[in-house]
Every structure is written in C-alpha cells, then in structure tokens.
Length: 609
Image (cartoon, rainbow, N blue to C red; front, side, top):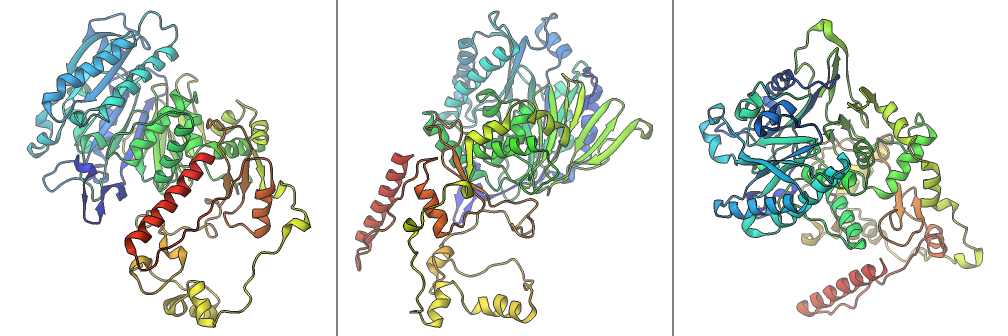
C-alpha cells in the first residue's frame, strides 16, 4: 500500500485537497527556441510560495510539459531527418521495488512492439542531484525514457496518436493492477509532448533535469505546475502536470463524476483502470484523455464540456452557444472546483477557470509570447513589448492554436465550437423539459396524503428537524430582524447516528463539499454561478437504448411532477420498493435483513438500468 492510500483512524487521504501554482508560456510564431525554457524557469522561480515544502526543504512536487524538441531528439537519436509527428517519447516512473524493473521494461517494450513502433533509444533521463537539497534525493524516482518512430503504415498523425493511446492503455492495465509493480507510472507517452516532474520545488525543476538546461533543447510551448499538498504525503507520481493538463484547486464533484463514468463504462461493457491513491486532478486528466482519444472530441471541446461556464442564467450568450452548453450538460458531468486548468497537446495550449472562478489566472501578451499564470509579473517582459495584460474571469478561457496561429478568448472560442455542429437539433432530440410533458388527466391526479393535524406542536418540531438551537440561532433572530442571522460555519454537533437528538432522515446525510477552503455558496445568492437543474434518464451516447432525457429545474418535485414523470413515455421509468421488515430485539438478524433489502434494491436498479 502506498502512502497515498493509507488511512489512520478517521483520517483518509482521499478527502484532502490542494492549492497550487500553474501557468503556460508559448511563442506565437511556433518557432522552437531555448529561450522559452529560460523564461519558463523565471516564472517557476517566482512562485516557490505556491508550492509546499517540508521542514527539510523537500518540495511537494513540481514539473513541466513541453512540446517535443526536434533539435534535441535529432541529436539524441542520431536521426537527423526526424520530423514532428514521425516519432514519439515515453517517460515512465519504474516500480519502487527495483527487482521488478525488468518486468516493467518488458511490458513497455511489448506494448510498443505490438503497435509496430521501432525503438530508437532507451535511456535514464539525466538529473543533477546538486540542484536539490540532500534530503530530497531519496524521494526522487528515476525516469526511464523511450524514443520510438512511427510505423510506415501510419498514414496520418491521428493514426499514430491512436496507436500510442492503445499502447498506453495496455501499459496502464498492468501498471495499475499488478501489486508487484507498485509505483510503475507513465508520466507521458505521446508524439506531441513530454512531461518531466518529481518531488521538487518550483525553482528546482529546470536545473534538476539536465535535458532542460541543454541549449539544444528548444521548444515553443511549456506549461508548468507546482504543488501545495495540504495534509497529505506527497509523492512524485502526484506531482503535475499530467498528460494533457495541470490543475490548481480541487474538484468537489470528483466522486460523483467517477461513479457516473463507471456506470457509463458498465453500460458499454468497458472498464476504467485508474492508478491507486491518485488525486482528483489525475482522474480528471484521464477522463480528458478519454474524451479526446476515445470519444473523438477535440481538446478545447472536451475541456469546455467537462468544465462548462455558468450558462443557465447568462442572457449574453447566443442561442447557438446556449444550445451547445445545454447539450454538453446532458452527457457530461460537470467538474466544478474551484479549479484553474492549464491544458495543452503540443498544438493547442490554453487556460480555463471553472464557473466559480475562485482561483487566479493572469494573462500577458507580448510581441512574441502569450502567457497565462497564477500571478501577474512572473516573467519580467520589457514594458515596450507588452501588448496587453488581463485576467481570466469565472467560466472563462484563453487558448492559443498554433495551427491557426492565433489566440481565442472565451466568446470567440464558444462561438467557434457552437458553429461546428447543429446543437439545437441535437438538443431537441436529446431532452424534453418537465413542464412540456403532457399534463396528467384530472381523474388520475388523485390527492396526496396531507397532514391532518394529528401531531402535537413538539412532535411537528421533530418532524421538521427543528430543535432548541434552530430557534435560538436561526428562527428567533430571523423573526426579530427579518433577515438571516450571521454566524460561524463551524458545526460541532454529534452525527445523527450517535445523537439522542433525532434530527430526521436528512440529518443522516452529509455534504461532500470542501467548504473549509471555499466561501459558503448557495443557489440563491450565487444564482449566476449555480444551478439546480437535473436531467433524468440515460445519457446520450451512453450505450443505453436511445431516449430523451427529462430535465427538471429543481430536484424538489411536487406530487403532480412525479405523476407526470410516471405517466410520460419519453424515457423508461420504474418505481422501486424501499421498505423492509425490521427484526426487533435481534441486532444481527435485523442487520442481515437490512443488508438483504439494500442488496435487493441495488440489484433491481441495476437490472432496470
């Protein structure tokens, strides 16, 4: 078991979050130069405070993602005619137990050979231990690098990318599941980019990796990350960037999204293999890679669909953009943060903020460069070369497309994406609003059971989850002042299962939201950034029988709403029995009956789905 999987008492590392520093720099003309790495180093040296550091000076993690340098890899391989798109590079952490290094090397070699790749060279990435503190050296993992060429039968770069992806999936299937291979991790495997990272501080990245100080190492784009690991044990594999992105913040929707992905994969008779003990950022990167390689989305579309802006109450968006974003909401789970995202694939590099916008991203454009970083002034460009400075707002983005040789802001990007497909037609075929469903005839409406006044006042308080604290700190001040009482966020009461103060069914549930690091939010005060919309039914392209989803504006349904859903024919619906017969005064028998009822309910839902 790795340190990232350990649990101590009530402590679980899976609940921990990070707040870090991110950024990118790219040459607008696409020319590869060593100057990009020098300026990137300057940016990394400006934010050591955004990375965590132990008392011994060991960094929580930092790294860079770069486009593949033609001059460097031509010299390394001796293949002076090497061209972009004709070769790929794979960087790997080998298993923690050196006895299994040969097995890991064999897995990588077999996967590359199976896809028809010719290995040009294999080497250990050279490092300079003198660039880091002595205490940090034992925490670093060696990186083994493969450089390989595309097979002759690969007619297009897209086909080469697909074969590389298949090799990566084959490697991951063993690296993440065989216990003896713990620590075996692909940093990157690509014909476009490579990732270098470790347990480093931000200012140590460049001098530590000797390749990055080599004047022949010339690139046009670099994006970087420095990690602040909050109350967790850092590990080199948890350092960023990952393969397509670097992330500052946390994903409060991570667990729900992963469950949804697993359900869709099950419906498609597929499986998702994830590294054990990894972070929400790593899982987001895996999902992003799947959207691009397996679902066929371009990188920008995938990023927007996975981290959409708050479109529901934004009247400034065009109808086409609104239709696109609503369609995305039907099949893609939102990855809400706070989250600042840097993404890139060697051709496109960009930055995006989630809809809450609680992580900073500052922009600067000069005659030669476009940069986005966590803080302003990380690179000291001459004042006369600066064209504009700015920041990315909540739900906004800025990216540079080297194929188009231009930058795209939020509005331009959304309009461009919306024009690529007829999302209005797709939307009409994919969903129906609850209020547009046929009304239930009066004779079928019946009358729901209503409260008939048979409860005493104190019993009603219990039924509505009110207690003395509710009146003292909430109800009485509101009645006296006409406004909500301001109070602290702390909640020190015992959980309902351990309390003799019955609080109702709702009190048995807890909120999975990192409220400690974020300001309190609700759908009333932050209506511009939040939504209560829920889509019922199978997602488009989920492998289920095609049917329109039913969209409700709030998860709170009236009696007539439920009747409408029950009587409609747009999507299959089923009711499930949730009652069970308790066995009184027999604890073990009652537990067995409850477990049997829960298992039966799960089986019935799975069979229906």
